[in-house]
Amino acid sequence: MSVVRNDYYNPLDIKTLENPYPIYDQLRTKRPVFFHEGMKSWVLSRYSDCKEVLANNDAYAMDLRRIGKDVPRVSQNLQSLDPPDNKGLRSLILQANSKKDKKKFESNTREFIDKMFFEVRDADEFDFMRRISAPLSLRITCELLGVPEPDLFSYLRISDDIAHQMDGGLNPDYLEPGNEARKKLNIIVEQWFSSQSEDEGIIHYLRNNREKANVPEHYVRNSAAVMFNASFGTLYAALGNVIKAIIENPWILDELKGANDKLYTSAANELVRYDGPAQGTSRFAVEDTTINGVKVNRGDIVLTLLAAANRDPEKFYKPHNIILDRQNNSHLGFGWGPHVCIGGRVGQIVIKELIKSLQELPPIKITRTPERRYTATVRCIDVLPLTLKA
Image 1 (cartoon, rainbow, N blue to C red):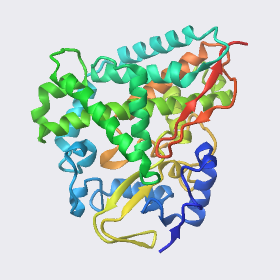
Image 2 (image 1 turned 135 degrees about the vertical axis):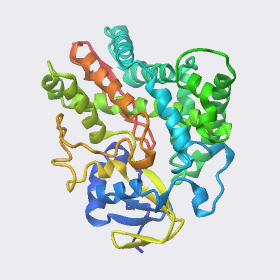
Image 3 (image 1 turned 180 degrees about the horizontal axis):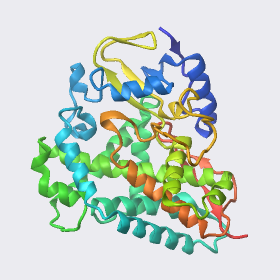
Image 4 (image 1 turned 90 degrees about the vertical axis):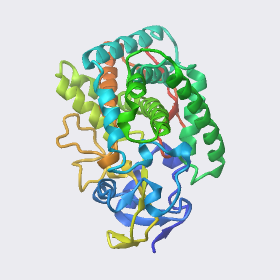
């Protein structure tokens, strides 16, 4: 067994948080499949290996019951179900998502982005994460689900604790605050489902059609909570990464001037591949197997490093470059296979509208060194100080 100690690959190391891609390159070349002592899991970094694990539902599970373990009631949701058990619930959520008017959604998104930038146009400095990314991510998420907006800064704390909990295998101190945050989120969701509001959105659709999910009702409510936090947290992190990449590569806006919608969509997709928020996701081996010649036992955790796979030169031409019209860009930034992210297309639309809004603004500049949030599973900037002033 190839075992790697925490000091060789520590996802929470400050240098790794700032720029994980050099260590990902080393892992793909020298240790593409290894057992990480701290995380108690196999770690994969090559695109082909990661995609195979995500796509092969027969051999790799998210549902712990398939390896003989219980799933606590609070964790029973769409993510904890594998095919075919997740078919009804996943289809119901996709149906609810399809009810949205795409053009109206795009227009509302752009209008809100423009409004927020207008409010900071004269600021010597503003924090993009708190002033733009957080309220935008909350507005988008609440509009999709058709629910009232919770207090922004209270929800930021909830989301932050849940993001830290994803790194509980690296730091057990993150586990309990994360559990408390999830309880607070569940209370918010319970209020939505008990409400008689007729607002159009996913919650309204789920509330009126939940019997079609073919699962106990608490699965539907728990899935709504997971969906809400995943939408907010992923967007919040992605928008910070995207705007930082654009500021550091000002040619992007020049190249997109006058471009058609297809190129904007391609650019949004490419920026997620280049520096997306999702760094990794795990599965459990359903049976004894081998990955790249390495034996993996039934029940072992297998961590796919999505961000490492997305810069694999065996899959992507010039993987460390941003290529706005990259062809066949089947990256893993939204996952892959039966658990691929339902909201990936929404994320692309929001990123696309953000880029279009930037085209109408004075050059945006970083005023001082940004600060990274101390989370590894979700790559996110904590403070991004910017200005629109000359």
